[in-house]
Length: 180
Image 1 (cartoon, rainbow, N blue to C red):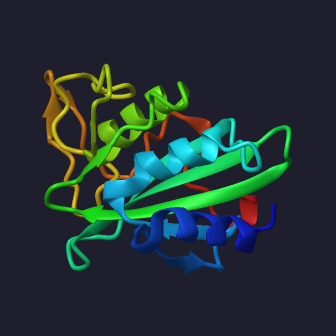
Image 2 (cartoon, rainbow, N blue to C red):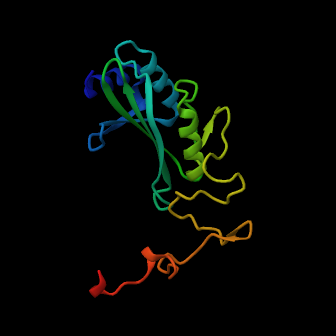
Image 3 (tube, one colour):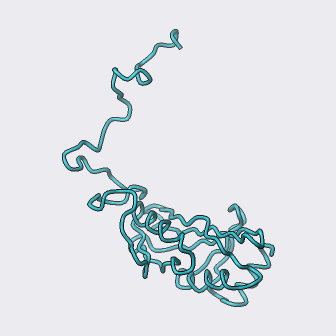
């Protein structure tokens, strides 16, 4: 199915839950109301003509404190049908909560945990929503635009001056222009 056919199918089935499209995205994206994301995903998975059997990626995007929003992006692929689709959902940054799609695609388990770990997005009904990359006692969410690193973690320095490197590591030694 082509993008417009899928969008028309979703609009017919879900009406106002289809908020628009992003034709600059690759693949093209359909904007979905957050309250209907699991219904839309389940529909796309179960429907014979769409059969999106793979969630290739689920990621979160922080639009920053000024925009006060975040996005959850779903990249879907149908192996037997050979078509791609992106779904985008905008959520409130102060209360970033959305329903889990882990019961539709098992791979969402780790994708949702990563978005939770790095951005603080809560996935309702996720069976094991906990940090996956950072230690469980890490402070904050590093991919948020206003994230500030903690000074120390269990006595180890976390913050460091990225412009200063140790002189005893050859690739970090300052070199003059003549030696390069």
